[in-house]
Amino acid sequence: APAMDAAAQPAGPAAPGASPTASPDGAEVHAPRAAREKHKPSPAEQEANRHFMDLVDAMEAALAQGQLHIAAEHDKALKESKTGRLTPAQSERLAHARADLKRLGDWARWGGNVSREELVHAVEQLPAEGLGMSELAKKVGSMRERWKGLDGVSGAAPKALWEKFDAACTAAYAPAAAHFKHLADERHSNADKAQQLVDEANALIEKDAAQLEAAGGAQADRAEAASGNLPQTHDWRTLASSTQRLRQAWSRLGTIDRKDKKRLDAAFSKAMDTLMAPLDAQRKIEVARREQLIEEVGKLNPLERHTIDTLRGLQESWQGHARALPLERKTEQALWQKFRAACDQVFAKRKEHAHAADHERKAHLHAREAICAGLESASFEGEDKAVLGAIAKALKDAASAWHASGVVPRASEQKIDQRYRAAVGALQAQADSIRKRAGAAQANALREKLRLVQALESALAGAEAIDSADWSGRWQALPTLPPEQERTLRARLDAALKAAEGAGQGARAAYAAQLETNRQRLLSEVLRLEIVAGIDSGAEFAKDRLKMQVEVLQSSLKSGQKPASHAAQFLALCAMPALADARTASRIEQLFRKFGAEGK
Figure (cartoon, rainbow, N blue to C red):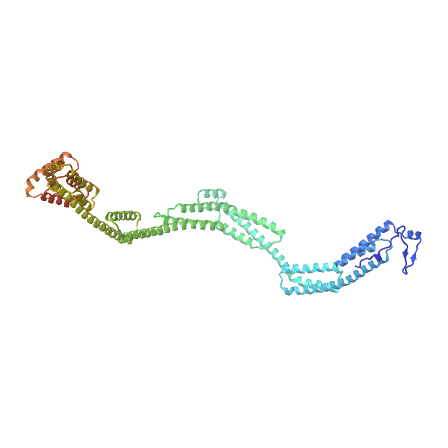
């Protein structure tokens, strides 16, 4: 809208003392003061003029924003408002705004007709779009609303255009109208079907009541239920199948008008509650019986011999109950799953136990094979004593592991036992060989050290010079004996060396005399040990042997104690310092070969 410039503003009265106004040609015009005061607007006129021009401002703003209907409302208000005389500039501004309003109105009417033509075309294209019935109905309704909106913006449409639009909408909506009519017919048909189901349920109620009365009434029903049997006062299978069929048919009915649905739902629910009352009560009892069967299966010991026969009996009982009175499908399925799971668990545990036992036996076999392989591949190094200890430990560990391994498969038992005995025998033979070799070495060492001591004592009794260092060196050069044997012979050697090293010849002579004195005692002890060992003493000692045998027998009878071991008696013989001739030394070595190397 054109803005009002300063020249167009209404001229107000000149202030006192103001300069006179100028004419267009520059001449001063002195207007009379009374004339100026005569045209001065009153405050009310000024307020009316200000309100009028505010409406003009609003109208121009609406035109600038394209809000044609708002601008038209402002123009109507301007026409109805009263104001004083407008200045030429104000009149021109108002005329310009109304010209814009007319021009925009003409454009709007033209544009509205164009939009209406587009709406008509869009409606005519709707049948070809293949829309669903609900969407088609919404589309047609939306088109009509848009037409009404154009009436508010662009004014009323030409009659011919409106009739064309209305006919197009009617034609486009026709499939939806037919569809909705079909749905209404279906709702009425569904209501008729629902009523038929209600009537059928009521007929079943009457039939069941007649059967109950014929069987003796509710008292007979309770009596049979208390006995644990399925009451024959109702046709349970017919009740179960009929109620299930009626419910399924009701669920498939489809839509019913709201005014009928509430009534039919109430009637059907009432009839079904009456039908289901005895069935639900009996089904609770049947559920408890099924759960009891599940519990009985759970108590079975899978490993007992007669478990399978018992389980089959429980399964037959379950099938009998299921045939007599089927439960609700969901409940029946859930209980059956629990029963089947319990049965499967029994079979699974039996199978698992069999597999576990077989697996365990195979594991035991593998363990025993590993034991045999360990014994067969065992190798030992080091000194004989350490090797013997290692072999003993290996055999002990193997025996412990063997006994802890448990039963093996019967088909492999004999073979693995033979392999184990062979492996153990091989190690024991190796140990025996080592012990034999060690015993021989020990016997040789004992014999050599005993000979060394006997030689020293013979030298001591004679006139030979004795070099203690030499005799000690010869002793050290020989292998070490077991501790007790080593101490015994070493003490005998040291006693002889000490006597040889004593001051003067007195100590040596005294010890030599003791050696000679012990000669007879040594002979007597050798004879006694020959008797104990069962060794022939020779013809020259036959008389003495007979006498000694009597003494040995009497001594053993009197003491009543277990005699010392052969090795201990032989060691006591070796501890005795005494001179021995070649024959006696030979007899002592013969005793040694008999039991001197036993080490016991």
